[in-house]
Image (cartoon, rainbow over all chains, first blue to last red; front, side, top):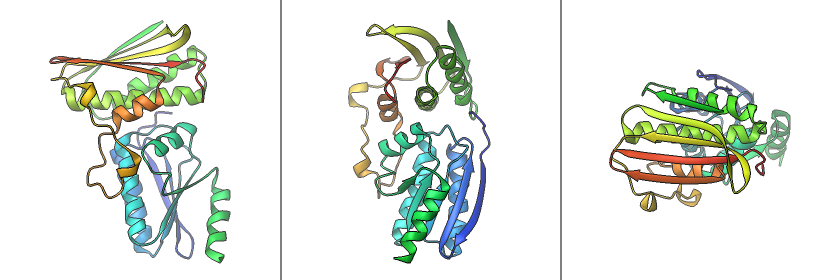
Length: 122
Length: 138
């Protein structure tokens, strides 16, 4: 569970919707790698971002604070942030730090994509 | 069963302590979710100790009993200037957005993720004692 170097990938899921997948330790470096990927997707016009944390089992508060900054930037653009594949401890940490009050959480990527695409058709 | 670590202040050394939680918690039969909660608390305690203590950190892990329940005990000690736990900042999710500094969540997370937390601090020595029940509520 203690893989040091985070692996981050990004993809366009659909028009305006981006995916960042991150596996590894979310500390200051890991959080910044996710933030960089998120910024690139936002520059490509994404206002909805899904962050998939499958493979991430340990985080720290500095890394989560960087995720909060991503949330703020998206909210400034009237966008939205969603997460999927959170371990119970990561979900609780996000709850304690106020992240889930403003972001959506889904059990897995399929559920997240279904919900996000459903929102887009409304 | 006891593990003692003397951690130098180097990047990501807190993961060594988290690995010790994983190993000892697993040996005690703790549920993976509880092990991960204790690991995050350990990481936060080590980061606080390195940031505020400024020097090497001593970590002790052992099995114990608290309120007559078996538990994993973690103690993190540094030799910084110390602080008053009663006046340490308490963060709230209600005020996190729009706030310039989003730091200072360590103690809040530790208290929320562990079953018992006690802090003794004086100039030259701060000890964070925390325990997680082997059979904690998820």
